[in-house]
Structures are given as C-alpha cells and as structure tokens.
Amino acid sequence: MPEHNTDRERVEFALKTEQDGHEFYQMTSKRMTHKLARAAFVLLGKEELRHVELIEGLRKQMGGEGEAPTIETITRKALELGLKSIYESAQEDPVKDEMDPAMAYEKAIELEKQTTSLYAEYAKECDDDGAKRLFTVLLQEEEHHLNLLEDMHAYLTKPDEWFIDRDGILLDGG
Image (tube, rainbow, N blue to C red; front, top):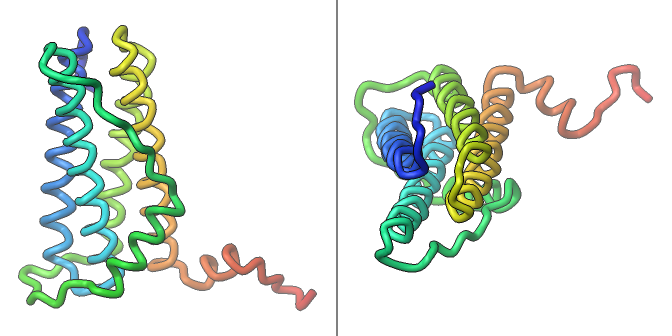
C-alpha cells in the first residue's frame, strides 16, 4: 500500500482511488449482458462518484476554500433498494467485449478489499478531524460495497447455497 504521510496526500490519493473506481465500474457495466450484474456496477459507479464529491469537498475545506462536506452515510439496505430500482430500469445498450460476471465480481471484490484496507489505515492516521471522520464513513460504505459484491458473487456462483443462507432452509426437512 502506498505511503502517504500527510492528510493532504491521503485525500489526493483517495480522490484518485475513487475516480479510478468509478471508471472501473462504468467500464465493467458496459461489458455486462447479465442485467443484475450490470445494475450493480452502475449503482457502485454512482456511489464512487458520490465519494469523489465528498473527498473534493474535504480537499477544498482543508485548503480553506469552503465548508466541510455534509456526510450522509449510505446503509447496506439503501444500497440494496437502489439496486432494485436500478435493476428495474437496467440499460439495454449493446454490449461490446462481454465480460464474465463472476470474474467481474471477483475483480471488484479485490478492489473493494484494497480500498477498505486503505481507508481503515487513513482513518487511524489522519490528524484532521474532518478527514478522519470522512475516511471512517468511506470505510463503512466501502465495507457495504464489499458485502454487497460478495453476496451477489455467491448468488451468481453458488445459488443453492445462497438461497439456503438467505432463507434458512434446513436440509434435514426440519
């Protein structure tokens, strides 16, 4: 993981990380024929853009150019509700260079794990209270993203186990 010694360096790297995350999710969504996967990547791309806006607000505030950003945490439940509404209107654009949904989820899970680890480190290291608070919120939201991706990967790759875990079905008939 890169070494960032100042809050400003951390904020700049987080901004780049979220911008790259948005590009990844946008590119990936365009390569999906699987509607649910496409909807998930569209949703997560929008979430990354929201993070960009929060980090840009913090950067301006740290530079004396404005107020601290208003941070509204997005819950896992809100993400799932957003996914349902996006899924209902999933894009029908032609897909170029189709990507395997399971592989895309695996890559996204890997990236979210790295981002989660980065923000956990930043939340501990920051001196600026606003930066510490923002990285704590971003950490929580990235954990929600990670959990959502892992859940969707399980649904796609092990649907029988996913339904058993979700519904609490007992195999012994009890």
